[in-house]
Length: 405
Image (tube, rainbow, N blue to C red):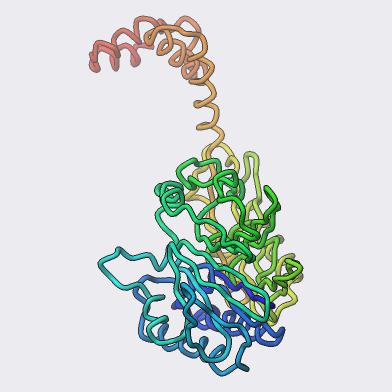
């Protein structure tokens, strides 16, 4: 049985002119690839939509998308629920909801609407079986839930493989080992928490393609069909679909045709001037534009970090001049996160002073002494007296004392 996996299409993602049709076009591309490669079953592990309450225009797009599977050649696969065969036209589609589509039990989510319209089979904390000839694939699924509760919900669901079948489990959560951050609240599920005995666990949500074998099974992340957050990992991997031969369990990644490139760079500076920063920024953008081979203008994300020359602040670095020169040639996300040399030095001084375990007064006097050493005050200046006047909040006497000196 040939199975196609298409994840995170995010229909309705952007209203911006440059990307307004991109989510739909990429999804159409993905579904067309599945059909061209004779997929007999399509699995969608969440975030078909970008919003839990899609706009009318986005609903229209989704109907256009699923008409491709409806109008395709009838699949020989049979879909069964608790032994009862379910009717469908064309190629069957089994889906779970993602975190973008999550709604409380009091409200219908978009996937329930699609199922009611006959476009998909929607599962959450249950399973369907797909059968062809003597082959059976059980597709289990748990839709996306808030990350803090994900592990508890997975344990409560506790899915078990079906005997005499290949068992697939669809999830839509963060997995700790695949996150680029150490933030424990970003994910509660680790690979060690994944249910055992499944031939393939398919996880949506994370937008880059990856595969990892574990405990006799395999974890597959198909990745998204559209870039939404411009992350570094997405710049290193293409968007596409995954095909699986359920008999051999071999997987094949097929890139989308004519996909938009994402270029990502982090540039660090030491005591830089605005002119130096803008020059390097312009050079890097030129390099990226020369590397772009797609028909679509690329996405370019650049992070500018480091320290600025003494006396400068972030507001002194105006990026608009450079970015306006490249208007219409790329879609930019440029962030600046600079700190001044002076600020860095002060922080280090505080850390060094803290390590000495001195009293607050002693630390204050030492800091005052360092600051005054950079001024025109001579070495005979009575720092102790001046500090005590400040500590007593005797501002008038403090000013008189300074003027005398």
